[in-house]
Picture 1 (cartoon, one colour):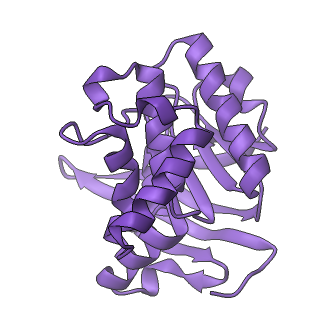
Picture 2: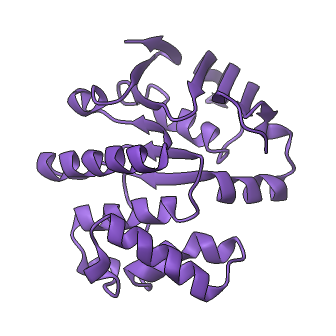
Length: 228
């Protein structure tokens, strides 16, 4: 895939559906771009469409209209299997609820994307060990999610998201289920990793203080984006 200054570009993005016989517009003609290495916060009230937008940017959902370009390529022109492979290689995801697999330990959870991509087990283990060390959890590698604190679980989720060195990190309320001190620690970690890997990040957050640490803030209101 070719490199360009603009990593992500959204043109005329729409999302709507029918409910109780009425058409509900969740996203209305969004247009914006994200520069490679930029940190963008998306804020807005509950129900404003933030999660829907994240799911579309991450190709977990398809728009009703419009385009989402990644390095100039239309993501939704891909066939489903190709899109799955693209997502695994180029994108990392962190959610409010970490979505770790409870039957596997921290190391095994972080290894999972590498194994799915076809990496040998030894290589996946080495990649995962490096990331766990970087997020400060090398000593907790053999612990299962139920043995970890909320903040530790989210650090494992971040390591898992970054194990394949994705070009884009999408985080949907990554601190929404954490206390203020732990939240600040998670954002500091994301900023450290951004500096180290020149990560491009799009982060949904309800915390305006933390959003203010990002390079740019976009606000979703009634399905329309506004710059703050």
